[in-house]
Amino acid sequence: MADPWPLDAFVDSLTAASPHTRRAYAFDAAEFAEWCRRGAAASPADVDHQVLRRYLAYLGTRGFAPRTVARKAAAVRAFFRFLRRRGIVERDPARSLRAPRGPARLPRVPKAAEASALIDGADPLDLEDPRARAVVLRDRAVLELLYAAGLRVAELCGLGPRDVDLRRGAVTVLGKGSKERMVPVGEPACDAMARYIDAGRPVLASSDSPADALFLNARGRRLTPRDARRILERHPLPDGRVLHPHALRHAFATHLLEGGADLRVVQELLGHVDVGTTQIYTHLTKDRLRSVYDASHPRA
Image (cartoon, rainbow, N blue to C red; front, side, top):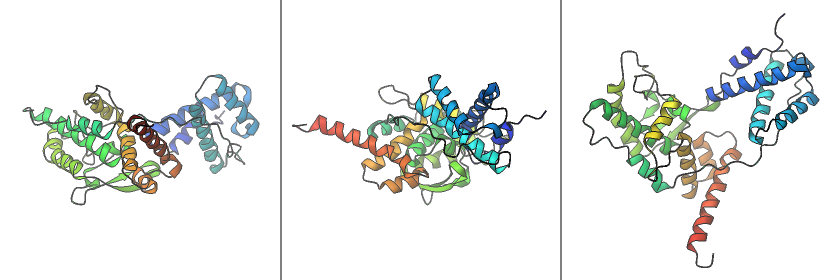
């Protein structure tokens, strides 16, 4: 008897999603299907809004954070949209399914001077070994680009040589939902990329290296998000703290807003579909302004 829960086909349909989202939705949809198999519903056609509310309540009893429950609800909504498109269910009971997100967690953002010190610390000048020098040239270009363009780590790893226009000072990025955007980058990032392209990438490349990969790891393969995290581990902040690559994206947005950039412009640069996603950085900026005021004003 065929399985009425077409989970593999659902995951295959998520072509526009990032690898991280595909993994999360695959796990969440399978978890929901298994819960239904234990007695809640024999097939997707047996699921109604009451069953879905019971499922959210069940997740609550397992102690998941509100934002995790919200993500799992989003996966279930995506699953039923897929089932409705395929004609497996006649109606979509998850269309109005919502879960409380809870308070948004503000990212920990390095100050501008800290970010600059981190990037400047990746200096290959004293390295004589060509391969070690190539690795640091790559690290410097990665750090510069994460901060200068506010890229997601998957976007950075997906860049190809043709996506970089050093003359115009811009990179073309394929973001979430396969949406392309062009992001300007400053002179330091352009210089770092030029040095890596001229003197770093040729040393790291092998006969098996993908020609469409800008950043290569030590084995000559396309740089992965895990490789990017290791780069940040090798180049901590001056106080020893290690950042996640996404922290430099947060810093990019926060420092632009602190410098007076328009929220809509920052939204476009980040590739956010909803300006509400970008607004988290306005709260972060207000908190920093408040701390500066409290520390500086004589009657604060």
